[in-house]
Image (cartoon, rainbow, N blue to C red; front, side):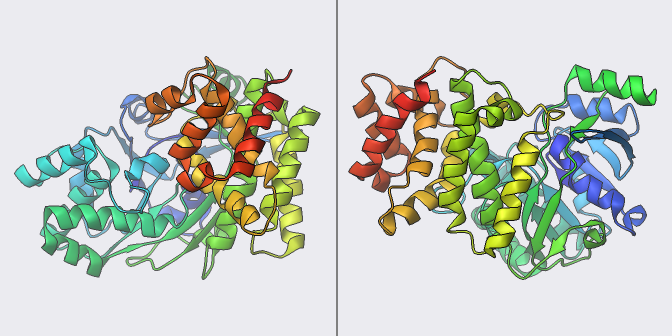
Length: 437
């Protein structure tokens, strides 16, 4: 099963299952996170879709058939029915960092209104329709326990450090609040696998639909466009089996953290820098921003800082950086900066702040990291639409004279960083630098 039916899942987890040698023995039942539109479009074509792999010189077209069924989020009876079936072995998820409703300490935020509403609904009726990802997972686990359907694995695939432990904590916290016996059952029967995922997959456009029709003749209402590069690293125990994803190129390792750091800091951190600085400089896509010599220089400076704290061989990190420049510059992948700019308050603490703290701890200026923060604050102070779960509070904090605004925003991001006068001075200077044409 998969929660979070969308382009990335269809270019990544579904693609790996399609290419696994035993992929034909598996089928994926995929559910949308909230809106039903994509489920309806895919259901009309038997969940089959076209994946376009856009290289710098040549495109490849592939029909993906590993998704066996698609459902809208509201089809809760189907969700419960699948999870009560012993043939279901694992649940992958792509619900974004915010979707797990975690507090800064890593526990589930039981005070959030939507989490509280789910808990109240499940107390009243264990089969009740719920809204959050933790609520849906716990409702499904309760159904599995009732039917004695056996063990299960949760496989989160979002850019969240230690995502396996994170989803396990969210699920167990909600289960404990609902029914301690359910939490005990989940602890004994459900495993959580930690993953690192990587494949740039822009939001689909009408142009993608037209291109697929022109080249293949297929009238596909829900095609996916992605890049040639793909990576999936995982560590943990699969309690009830899985497809042979490693035969399709996935890596099964003892510890995901080194790969996680490399990807979160070098790729995702650079994406955040390019999004905020690139938008400020009038660019619309990653390819446009990385072609700007100033933006590219800022990215290289950021990479120099972050690379020093990635626990992988220097040659591997250098090769990854070179590959990133090639991926970013791919003119066939229109990865929109405004899409990447969403949820900065959740992304920067995991993509940028670890390097900033590490550089400051060893006496460095952390100018590369502080520039990402400066570009973000400049974005908050602008007129562009802001998509962030803390957006209203951030807008207020970022308003007014620059110096006190910077201190207020940093206090929301990280109170300790807000007390570092060196970082404050750097961010103030770099906001002016980012804003300069």
